[in-house]
Length: 265
Image (tube, rainbow, N blue to C red; front, side, top):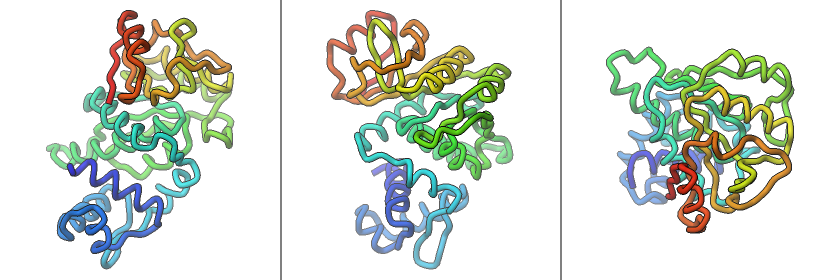
């Protein structure tokens, strides 16, 4: 198990249990206690948890919203998708995230990567990435990460998805330029494009796409070929689709024929 995989596993356990014991966690992950202690120390330095004698507890700011927001559906696939998606982002990039369980996983993976790269950098005070988001739960996780510069749009909060929407949200997005937009979607149809359930969320996600140099759609394979009520944008605006290995071969082939890079994990 790599360090990144261990860190994901540790944070998942912490989110579920609220606290970790070094010895029990080492046994669960089948690694040494010394390895778990080092991991917990490094995660504590990044403010992703609070170190205690013999273990760790969840950081209140970081985990309260994600605990309510977290979905168990396709969780393993979404973590693999997130690990692949963050490899498409370069240090110094400005990255936009809309809301959703998959984009939340990508944001978490980006924060972990930023922590490691900042540790190795000569100038440890410079943020590794800038993140622009309208998702309150993503903002809640990244606000305490000094390695990430965070920009949160204004707007009216939708309690179902923690997304900010409306004219205030659009006003901020119209004033920024993104290197990469990472979009979670509820449907992807070869003819209609990418879609979501709510029209106000669709209009904001469309702005993310318009303000970005590259658009990366992250979605588990259950969304491929599915339609939803509100259209975000056509597939001509999408550069990369990252999905899981269960994606139908014909759907992948159609996207490839349209010039869209498809990464399956």
